[in-house]
Image (cartoon, rainbow, N blue to C red; front, top):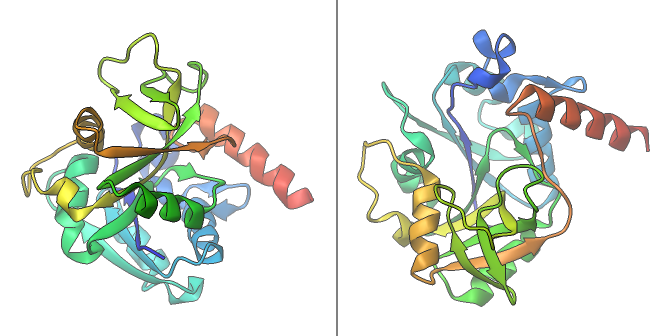
Length: 234
């Protein structure tokens, strides 16, 4: 399985006061730090290598997770440094650790999805990147993906169009070549990379049918807590 990059360097201001002293990755979600839920799930998926892109309170994450051996994983770290690099900039900085292709998702997301099927779809597409998409209808956020006949036509977070009915589910696969034009040591957003790839017909799409969970907001955190309580009662 491909390695996984987790983007976990943000300030998490929407979760204040919880995240005034701890990073979002260590927020308690139904009795368990969120990063534990993410890493345990990756190990069950057959993932072996994880790269944590960290910044804000990143030393706490590293002290807690260590080398990943307690989770059955190999975990390495890429630091933002003295300034926040943004999601795209953090990936560009982490490229020496990531190899030629890699999964990427966000440090506040829990994604009930089969990673192996996504990986197979990526290699079958022959494209340098893949985005998982969910039919959204503006439910979780403004729909920003035009997905038609199993093809991703355009992703546009900045100026979404009315005919866009899908949203970025949160799990992607990128090739190192897709990040070649991103300036090193400069802040950059992953959404811009995805947009540029899509309009060049270089972004494959993989449709997902089960919703995602996130802890980026108080409302999202509450939904995630309820989800895990329900799952763990079964």
